[in-house]
Structures are given as C-alpha cells and as structure tokens.
Length: 237
Image (cartoon, rainbow, N blue to C red; front, side, top):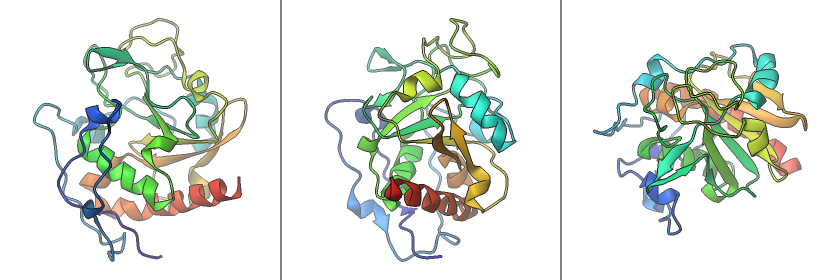
C-alpha cells in the first residue's frame, strides 16, 4: 500500500494562527517517514479548554447512505465562529480549490468552535500534504449543530447563525469537496465514499474525521485509500 508520512510528534499547531495573516508552517520535523499507515500510532492530544471526545460519541446527524449526501449536504447551514474577536463562517481563501466541510460535536457553545482543534489540524495538514495539497488550497467550514435538515434560514441551532449554506460557500473556484465525518462505515473502497456535490456535481468524498484517526489510528488505512482517489481526480483535472 505504500509509505505514508502520518506519524506525528505531539507539538500542536496554533489553530488560531491559521486564521491570521502570519501562519507558521507545520515543521518538517513533525513528519516521521517510513511507517506503514496500518500500524502508525498517533498520540491523541486533548486541549484542556475543549473536550473534543464528544465528537466521537455524538455528532450532528448526517445520512449514512452516500447517495443521500448529494441532496442533504449542499443545503446544510454553516455555523459561524469567532477568531480573535471576529465572527467568521470559514477559514481560508474564498478562491481555494478544495472545500472542507467538518461535522461538529452535537453540543456547541453559542458561537461554534473552530472547525478543527490544534492536533486535528496538524494531522489533517499532513493528510493534505500526502496528496500534494496544503492548507492554502482549502476553505474550511463547520456545519451548524442540532439542525438535521436546516438550510441557512436564520434559525439558531446549537451554533451561531450564518447566512450561508455549504453550496453557497463553495463558489466558482472549488473543484473538490471533502466532508470530515464522524462515521463513514468500514469500507476501504474509495468509490463507496464518493458522491456528486451540488448543482455543479463536483466530485466529493467523505473522510474519517481527524478526531477519529487520533483515537483509532487503524482507520488511517481507510482514509488513505480515499485520499488516493482524491489525488487521482485532482491530478486528472
């Protein structure tokens, strides 16, 4: 299956800095090559201020059937969150080619947390790097919580209101959509996790949420199979 550089040291990335102008790149020293993805071990780090274990236990409902995501996901409402006192609905450039949609914990404060915490961000950046992408290629958002079928209609639903849905956020530059989901089943066949997104029928995939990969590294094998399919589509575009 090949060698994948997904074994991390424990030094976290400053997630808040990712939203600012000056962003320190993930250190190359954080990558340890030569480990098979099936046996790689990542030590989970949980912030003292944020209990992320809830994402493994209970999340905003999304369809289990992959075909239903084509209909449901584009209309889901985006949650707003605060970064350095400023309320935002996404992280990254609106000209990014990859839209990353994050399934949130079921219980959120009035203003949602950042899409990914420090350790999740570090792992996800390495996942992107493995297929030739960087943080600058992505636009990240987090779904509103406790709002299974809602569109962005101004209803408060566990997170702050946003005037956008996933599809309106996608814009003209997005070529691919990645959904970081709590439970995607056990299949390691990448096509089982691919769907057409929105009116433009963009290629989209669901991936195991980084929180799950931190708590259960064996699922990295499944994630890598899906990421290779993403890489092939992007290379052919």
